[in-house]
Length: 635
Image (cartoon, rainbow, N blue to C red; front, side, top):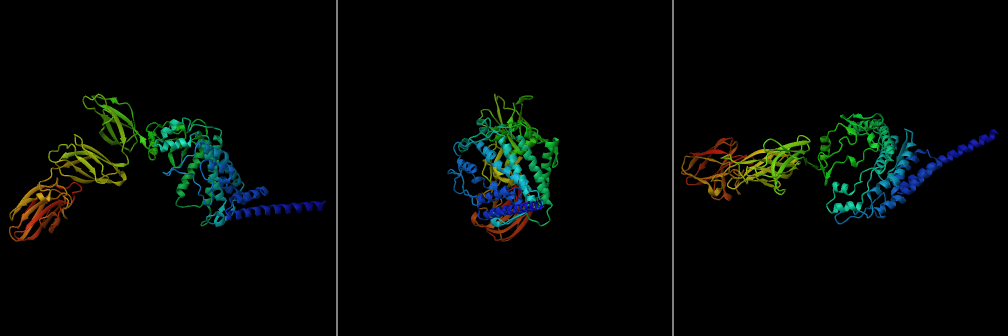
């Protein structure tokens, strides 16, 4: 009897040894298949190993990975790829080249009869079971000392060692994929791809059009998976926490698939805190967000059937969101502490936010109060029209709140007015008034020209103007040229990071000696003359150093030979004085010049009977410049 028991025990031990060895053999065969780029063979070998030893950790780790990698080659995955237009040729995961066809513009062609909901169905029916199976495989690996070394030939990339922390991180990602699939499957995505493509190619694709054409889009298709989504989310968080703790506590210098990064550690720490707050909200109710104590979060509403995605959407006008139309800034009770303005500002970073007006309110006299929903920090222009064709700018401003109320007094005799608010944020804009330098009166019809992008605007009857350029506000400014009939051109650089308002630009009548051909004649050995070069302009061919843009000209013949002193006193800060010989602007020869601070003088050794050309300019001509001056010549 004892002998029989001993024989049976010996046979059982030998069988167990043979079993373990056989599973190891299958794992080694699978690794060889990976080296040979045979994913299907490798997957089959790892599955065979698990059929012999379900707890084999290496087999579980490798099967979890390969069961996902072979999905495109399995019938369900392969048929779906064919259905959505991927050619059969080129479906090699190691060198994938299969791509759906495109039109001549490079736009993907939508396969006929394919509904967006089919993608969700494919995920739910065929991908999800493989993901859940991979999660199960990884859950069987409990040894925290687990290590699996893979060579570069086996990974088709580089040598890598996977440890317990890597597997928990992969498992967290798989749980997150489960959560995503369950959540997506709950939503109605019933929209034909061909219809969406037709909208796009017809240049009519917009969020508003899509929602109008598909009234059930983003409503609940089923609520059966919501609790499964909740469990998947909780499991994803728990696995991530385990993986993160393991990876952060590895010995220094140990390199694995996922590694600790000191630079990104603070962000990862905030991410962990946020995940923990979200998970706790499912167990304990709303939680104060650790990374922002002004916010409360609660994941519970996401997993009940009270709030569909569509019920949270604002109103769209084309692809623009109508300001003030967001139905619930708490997103169904998921987050508290955000104002409507907070949410709209966040949306405004990615979407066009459309200001929406309310009915005007009659104020005292004939004034109207017009209120628009606006985005704080955005730059707006209010326009008015009596016929919806011709629009006039009444004011421009930067909004400081989610509502902006403006006051306008319609012109006498106006029976009706229409108002619209235009958002000019993100671009350089300039507004102000153009005035006559001498009389101080407004100049109508003055042209304001952007030297950088060529946009123009004209001043109105009151001299007011508004110029919107295509130059990004981040550029810091723009150079403008302001001109009007009968006036000299002002060229100036204006600094700013958006709208530059309140400008007062003065234009002056050009001085008679603005151009070289009309230079003023000076005579005598002792000369003094006054003038103003504020309205002067740059003439083509003006030589250095009188080529800043405010040049005026004189001609003087030296009565006798000798040293002569040329003195200049100016109201401008940095005037320029230069003396030349020659009779043509293009061929003048510089004799002497001076750059002064308000005033200064220079000497020349003149030759009797020699004609000298004298130029006055201003170093700050590009910032306005010019002014009154007194020029003197004395021996």
